[in-house]
Length: 239
Ligand code: C5P
Image (cartoon, helix red, strand yellow):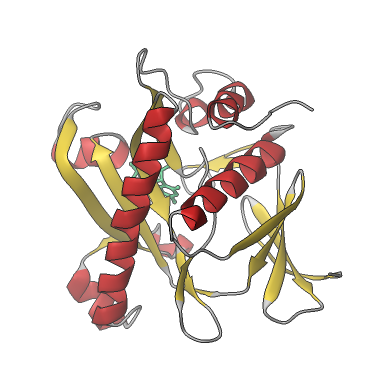
């Protein structure tokens, strides 16, 4: 497989074409951003950690029947994935109150919810990714009602698989964000990444934050806590 020209550069990844029109080459960058790009830093080792964690989680999800764009890990910072048209929705699944939900509902961070809560945000940087409901999705034509239901079901399945994986690793899966895309045949696949950049992960005993909140709130070393997650999942942070 040949790496081709740069197709797109996002906040955390660069996407390159390959000699196969249905496959793209992803490079995980070292940049960390928060608050819609207002806080930025370059953190050596971050790309490797996120690539390894995301590759490992996509593989574990595939073993449990969840189809994603992931094909294989190529190197420390690179993956091959199926090319998909990203559906402009950020799908957030929450098990425990935290972050923006804590602010929105005025509830204490850490309160467990009896069943998972799903939220849809419209993926649009200029609008600041607003929270939207099913009617807004229909109105915007972002997804059909059938696709919306499929995405919701897939997000709940991902949640139940990830909860089992993290539970076995002594980690609480507080919440996370998923993105979905459609392949050439119109099949909906899980896309983007699943990593401590996109999940809130707390140590089950100490409740230590092991995710991007460490960077957002300036309360520790991002690479140290991401390495803990990778090792708890059975990977190796240092070669
Ligand atoms: O900020 P908020 O509480 O809404 O975030 C919910 C979850 O979604 C968190 O795990 C956060 O890391 C993730 N998220 C993300 N990308 C965004 C917004 C939220 O990965 N643009």
